[in-house]
Length: 344
Figure 1 (cartoon, rainbow, N blue to C red):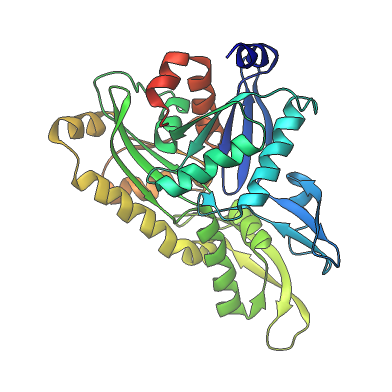
Figure 2: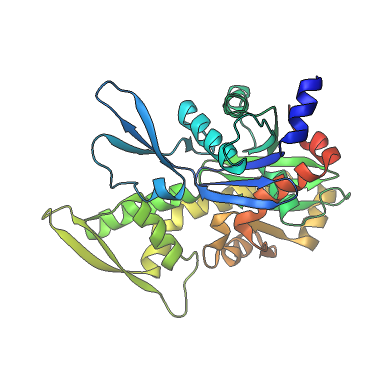
C-alpha cells in the first residue's frame, strides 16, 4: 500500500481514448499530449520473432506498402481488441512516451470503451493496460465520455442525446443525472464507410484502391447530402480488368452514393433509441436536440441528413474528434466523477 502511494506520487495519471482509428492520451493537468493512429508496424524474422518498428503516425504511413517481413497491424477492430499482444505493446509505447521512457513509473489509467462490451472484452482491455505498466485501470463507456466532452449537462435531471461516430463503432447514448438511461452500440462507423467507398469504386469503375485511399476520399469529398456545387478528386489505383495502373475522377455524388448504406444504418440505430425513449426525456431531446461527436461527425451534411430523418435539431459538437478524449480526461480530473462513472 505504501509502495503504491509512493509510485502514485511520482507517476502521472492518464486517460486513454483507445479508438479503432486513433488513440488519444491525456495527462492529468496537461490535456491531450498524444493523438496518433492505432497502428503498430512489426517486423518478423525467419524464426517468427517480432520486433516493433513503429507505432502511430509512422506505422500508418506503412499500411499497404510493406515488404513481406513487415506488417502494419491495427490491433483494434470494431472498437474491441483484435490483437491482445499488439494492443499491449501499443499501450506500453504510449505510456513510455508520456513518461519519457521512465519505466518504473506506473500511472493510474482510465480507458474509454464502447457501450455493450462483454465482460471478456472488458477484461482484455484492462489486462492489456495492466500488462503495459498501469497501476490501476478504470473503464468508462464512450457515450458518457462523449457527452461530458461535448459539454452536455450530464449531471442535471434533463435528457441529453449524443451520437459518437468513431472508427469501429457508433455509440448512441441518452444521458441524465450522471448515468446512461439508454445506450446502443453498432459496429457501423468510419471503417465501414471507408470499405463501402472502396467497394463502390471497384464495382463502378473497376479500380482497386486500399482502405487508406478510401478514408482520404471520405475526408476530401465525402458528403451525406447532395451538394449545390459537387466536389471532385483524382483517385489512383489498379484497373482490375487490364491490371494496369489507372486514375479516375471521383465526385462527391459518387461518394454520397457509396456511403448511403452505412449512414442509413446509423440513422436506423438512432431511430431505434428514440422509439424506446421515456416520455419525460423525449421532451428534453425535442428541446435540446441531438449532438454529434467523433470523426464521422465531420462528414459533410451528416447533421442535416439525420435531422431530416428524425425531425429533430442535430448539432455537431465543438472539436468532435476530441470529445471522447476530453470527456475521459475530465473524469480523470474529477475523482468523484471518475468513481461514479468507472465500471470496475
